[in-house]
Image (tube, rainbow, N blue to C red; front, side, top):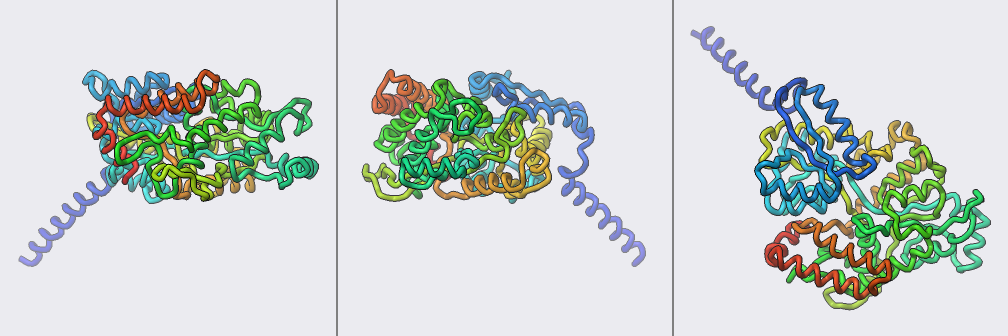
Length: 493
């Protein structure tokens, strides 16, 4: 009997051990041909230069070969992507399994619960603990729940010609004119002074007249987000997450004295850039810098990698990296007064995330592909090359590796670049995107009036007053109390 009992016990143990292994390894085993016959559709915009969407298309082809699945990648224009995304939420004939979106579009999807929360097995697969807290606690979550996977981490910083700033003759010339040492600006006032100094002469001796700055001023997302990055120094009060709206009544803050000062300066410094700067997109800004036409640019992290590995770059090894300039004063919207506080917020805007639809027929397949794109291994490669548009979002991304060396970065330059980004992303005082439903409408409205102010069709005050009035109409049309609730959820208050 004892022998018989032991045999039964052995079979019992083997059976349940096998079952346990099956469950625990269900999503971590080899996925070769596991999804044969299944198909998913991904939507992400065509940004014109294959940034963000390019790596997805490349990896989709490899993923199909490995898994047997069919992965369709749709890349409409920016505007059409917004329209098709919204349409997919109400039209049963339009089905997307994965949305790859800029974080400001998340509200329409997350606020109304169209997205599947990230499962535990996916977090384990992509090493969730490696993702920086600023992304996990803000951009990837909504009302405390994790819905998004990290793809591209973005922050806006300052890039400058370190070799020129350290040139002894030029430093002496600057000191003689302004009475202080030439170095990366720590305030927007210094930024303007340095921009003026470098405008209108051949400071790099290449036979061309150069300028102080380049910045995005073309009507669109790039210009709006860079304006908000500048305005943050004057208007992002420390410890107050509510940057765009008041959390009592959803009243816009964008027409207060701080925003007015920021837009006045945003327009004034155009004279220190190339004459074409009023039509510059972020892409034009990067090209202007890497071709040595300007001394400083405000941009996302793409400028760093493009400086090192774009074929037409002449500034590799000559770039300095600095935080966004700050201000000696900040406007307190609650008291409607300026306060003498040095304020230096970061701008973590324009981040690209990956979301899986709650209505996806093949959720496991969708999460498998999404986790591949968000993986430490793949993103660690993508962040080192300018063409991808993917920037650091993990602790491990800030470790210097042979991948950085192979990308064209010198070790010293790469470490300075990574140290800057890490510092920016660890700043508690930070401005992020509008993430509530209707974000595209709010951005479109203020973008329209900022453009009119840039073209001198409206005064700065008129432009921001009209922007605020239009924001009020958008809020009322979408439901003020609902928008207020979602805004508070979006900033995880």
